[in-house]
Length: 580
Image 1 (cartoon, rainbow, N blue to C red):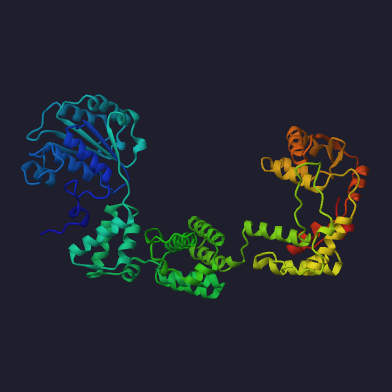
Image 2: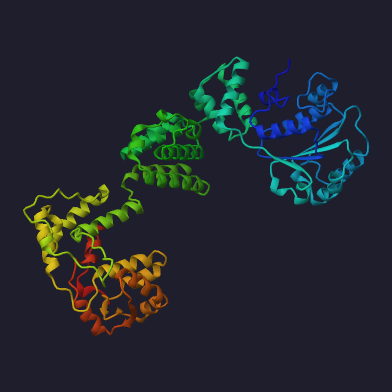
């Protein structure tokens, strides 16, 4: 007997055998059982998901001698002729090669003749979206009011190319891709029928590579069976098809996690020595990195990962954070795109692997923002937050007498949680601040010294008429969420002050004042709400001399520019070398 490929041999012949499209089969069975047979059907979906098979099963169900029935017998003359493809009443047309209006006119002439021996004359037009606009227009009247013995079944992989006038005249069925688990089970049945033994990992790889298309899975399965000699294994597939392999990827990413560029480049050379192409390696490395990212986010489903969690290197999983894996995946995707225009694909891959080994040095924007916030709190002495009262113009600090005495032991203050890359810079900054005598509280872990410093701050007089900072900060924080520009302009204002029932907000320049003026009403409402009384807001542009006097009245804090420059290893120029 002639060899028959698995996709043809396993083609379903009844709705009961039609797996993976339960919605389609259930609807068609119900319509056949109730006699509600439409004159036109439109099957749409990706390739290899059963559109043509469903059309043939429907044609058999319509012309079976026991029918129309949802369960064709398969033994009558009509069923056997349709199964062999020799029925004169079931006409299959390839829409890609019959696109002209003349082909459709031929169909219009043929539908005038009744079926030869069956109950219905069924036209199955595959890839119907390939028809020309003129051909579609010629079909409109025919499919809208065909003879009672005519049924049209259209199949397409690109539904958006079918005109709306055709869609409105058809019952539409959307076919879905098959789940990986279902394809794996169907491949296991096919392997058992052929007498071949197959590892679960190998079948999972075939199912995942098919992309949800059962026909593609059967085709790849036939290819693997042809060189497996009756035993399908993952290692055999890797060697014969030129794949990178899980072990090689584990070694590559393990070296990257350890920052060992030499070991990573050696592993890369071994992969290239086996004949793996740069494109294949980039694709598989990106998929491996994606799997690590999914595992980091709690997803352990083998059908999504392509392998069990235990197959991935534990050192790489522990070393890489989700943020670094995102950066690595973005780099590998860029690598795949750049391979098309590179001088040498191997150079691009080696560069990407070298970057992978330095991935541990990467600090994400989130980590950097947290580190800067921690540095600010540490340099400022981590003073406790001041809350605004429910009434009164502003908040006041509690007197020093209400705080714990210096002798009272306090729990040790937790150091800021900084990335390792910023720890050395942070320590050098703290030591420099101690040498300059700027922030003794930064270096002191003694709660008694902190209590003394806070008491001195509380005893320091507030400049006359000046509103405490909590009101200013609270207003900026509340209004800045919706307008970053407003937040920036308010933050650059001079210290605020309250004069009777008026809140004065001074600025150095008229540009910032003009930006804030557009939100004057919102500022007045928010300031009144926080202060607990009605306040009117007045904007004022101070002269250069007046601005200097206002700034001089505010105690100077740590030099923030110097802090940032020290953290990021910058060099601050002497004041004499600075430009205006």
